[in-house]
Length: 153
Image 1: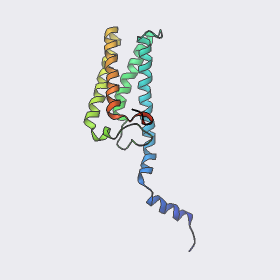
Image 2: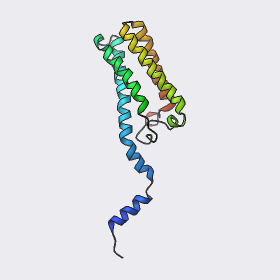
Image 3: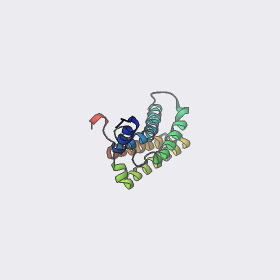
C-alpha cells in the first residue's frame, strides 16, 4: 500500500477536535471585540483625565463622550455565541445568562447616553455623576462576565 500524505491529512482533519477549528474561526470576532473594549477603556481614560484636570483638552469631551456612547451600542453586537476560549477573557456566563448580560449592557448604553447629554448641557456635576455610572457598568460587567487576567482575581 502506498502512503498518501493528503489522505493522512484528511483523516486527521476528521478526527481532530472541532473546537480547535472553531477557536480559529472565533479569533477575528474575539480580536474585534477586544478592539471595541480597548476603545471604551481608552476613551474613558482620556475623558477622565480631562474631567480631573490632568490635561487641558475640554474641547475634546464631546468627541470622547460620543465615542463612548457609540462603542457602548456596538458592544451589543460583539459577543457572538462561541467567541470565548483561550484567546478571550469573556466568560461562558455571557451566553449562559444572556438576560443578565444584556441588562448590564443596557446599563452601559444608558449611562453613556446620559454622559453624552450631560456634556451637551455643559453640566460638569452631571458629567461626573454619569462617569460614575459608566464606571459602575464597566465594573459590574467585568466582575460577572470577565475572566481574571493571567489567573489573577
